[in-house]
Length: 568
Image 1 (cartoon, rainbow, N blue to C red):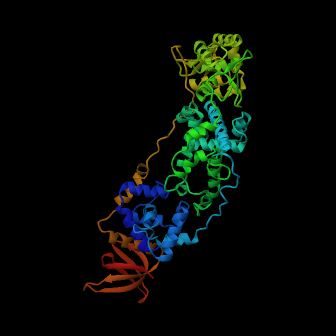
Image 2 (cartoon, rainbow, N blue to C red; image 1 turned 135 degrees about the vertical axis):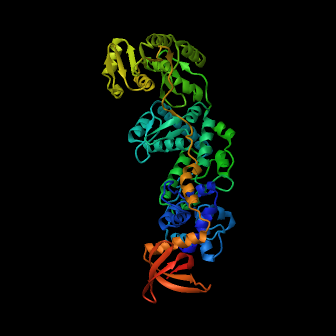
């Protein structure tokens, strides 16, 4: 790093408006609470070799080539890339790379990424079948996550237990597929990840009620739009897949990331296994839209009726419309996911439907409209029986602030010894049980354990609590301007009317700190100048103290007489 570069960058940073400066700091991933006290500190920090090597990880192959060409030819970076590089303090405003950037670029190791794709081609119909299967699998995962959030381990991956659970439930064909589908859902905003779990967002809940084609199109659009900028084409699509492995040549994490991105696009059938999009999805690659009508003609026809059987099962003669499947799953357990899906009613599943807000009348009306064969007597009897049983266990707040469970003694005794409910910390209180756990959490743990529970308010009025596992679609993020506001205020407070004097004092402070030998130009009383070589020793009271190398004497010079400083 040269002093001239640092000074030029410091001057430029000082001229930026707060929003532009915040955007630069954010692009360079500067910690908002860094200890910089002035713009000279900021310039030094941004041109620090370690910081620049981290910044190069975000430089695309096109930008890297432009920087190298500018250094080799001695000409500024082309205007098409100049603003983007200058906005990250990798070049000055004219597009000339800083010397420190040139040094970092020459010493940066290029990552060796494997080819992005190695599969074979497939027909449009086969791709459409994979699209249908992927949408159905993702819906199963969201259904599961609505009941129980998916656990996330420290590395950010899906827990081994939930990977097995999703495979065992038929939601994913393999643990790796489960990982890919959860990644797709997060990219599309259908799952929201926290430190320890993924939960369904309100957008995910809405997505579950939409038709298969709309489901696929929504997710495919999100996957395309969230591709890293180096992969996007000027038209809004993406660059040829052969160029993807080298898109971020200095990012050591890129090989793993590009493999995961390709795996998600192939799994969602945006790409065939050979890396080319199906004909009906080609618009996505070009920056427009997939052909929804062409895809729809290749997918199985969705049905809106089922056959209700005397053995308490429902058979759909084709893929059931998602909105109907969504409601049917609240009252029956799906046993197969083939195009002719089977659902089974039990006392527990019907009780769970009542817990979620259904009544005997609403459930009977729904099944009557859904069925091609009416509601069989055995199922009608089971609904009536479950309705009679529902509410024999009540849960609500009491006057002491606890959650109170009341109901039949045999139910309370069973709950008190149920190992699955031990986390509630239930304690006997007279004929009831109490817990410090919230009413909603207690209610859903009991409902998931298939107890006939009814939630009530403090006055005993029944209510239907919402599922705890639905998160907001988007969590408002603090803007860069807000995050960096304290740091920017500190930097701007350091501005001096005499920038030259401030820079000179900084150079002298650094020389004293390192006991450096420097050449100093001094203005004499008669207006002439004189050069002297000093080993800087101290600075204070407006004076510089050091040993004159030529005369071998200690000198003290007033800062006001020093014109310039140069390293020896």
